Length: 185
Ligand code: FES
Image (cartoon, rainbow, N blue to C red; front, side, top):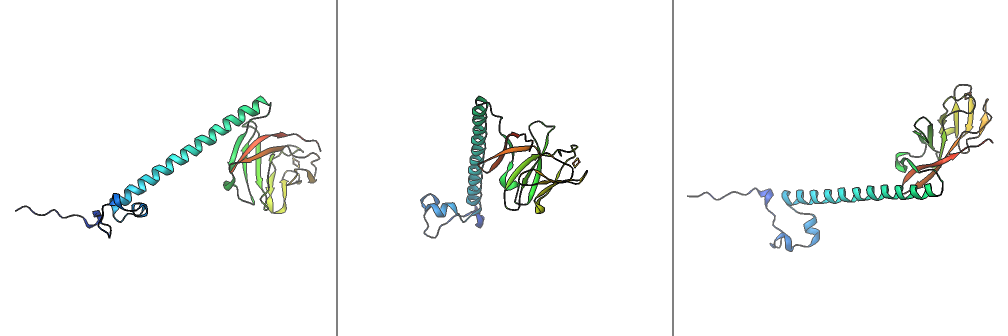
């Protein structure tokens, strides 16, 4: 005599009203009660997430290309992405290269959230400056030079000229380098 097939209890989808899953309200379809349905929803949501993030990334890239084309027509330097805003919390700093790979720069976010960026080369004898964010300064350890964090201007030690400032633009939660401001005072 043929044995009845035993079904895995986890594989049974039976809503309390007994109707099939296709006839259940959306909320029950989104929160199924068996594993196969649950995995299906996870996969579906994951695919949705992948498609949406890929789309957002593609739109972002197209936006940068269009912006850079417009900037080129105006004779302005291209935007170069430095970091996402949430990668640089208040009171932190990160290095980047701009406008060439040989130009070491510092992006600093002050404790008040203000963003500034400078070429890292000290204007005295070209040592690399380091941020002292809590003291709102940039420090050159070679000859104890100090620069104001907000303006890049020298405030103590041998440097007489301000640091070269990198112009910044923040769009869509991302920070871009948008040019160089050479200054003598
Ligand atoms: S090189 Fe920076 S203070 Fe001299």
